[in-house]
Picture 1 (cartoon, rainbow, N blue to C red):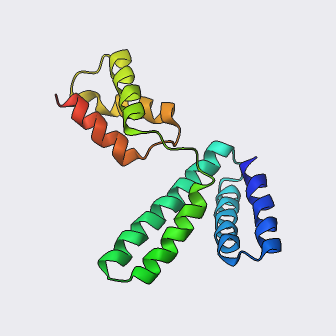
Picture 2: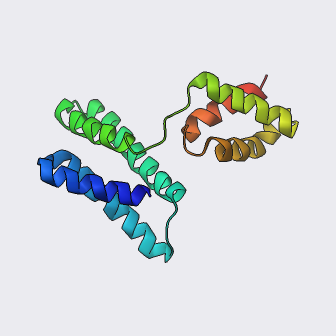
Picture 3: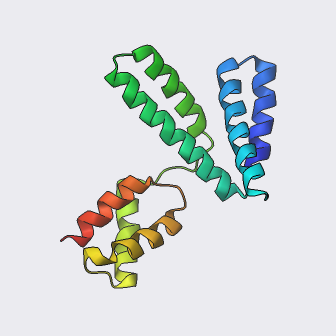
Length: 147
């Protein structure tokens, strides 16, 4: 479904002459097709979301690098690309929502120390399904388990 939506949006961007959106969507579809060919299987929406998240993460890293290099023009271009990609990603969880899920998971698993971090991370990652970044999840889990 997500791939079909991207293809539909690509056609709309072509018709409207939105070159920037068209370029980003073409890149996303290209990435999806590449993974599809490499894995030799049909991708689910969850697989596609992971690809989009990876692309978004790359944009965020590029923005930081361009800002460090004092290139606001390139950082702005990457920011626009990131905004387009984020339209196709699930809505991110707030920190409070994420903490609630983590607290529930810790009590479900009976986790009490940093030794249990891997189990908690795995369970939380499955529950949030791409609605939170791994680094944020890791930071909160670490805070909760080190108390």
